[in-house]
Length: 93
Image (cartoon, rainbow, N blue to C red; front, side, top):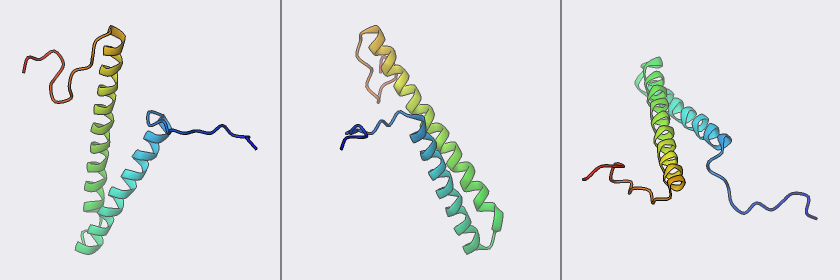
């Protein structure tokens, strides 16, 4: 009975995956901040700090992933190989 097509590989470039990643990470950082606040008795301080830290980390992760993907597509479009990750594009290091 083949009602649904068999998907052998999960696409990690989809928006739903990025949204779930962001939601889960923010909830984890919020929970860690809540736990630290209850343990140390400083109620809203660590919840706010950890949530902002998690949001900044997610933004940077998404930005670097986006930049990497765009340089990959740009190099594919121009027909050359992408630069190594440890060296900036166009640099003579």
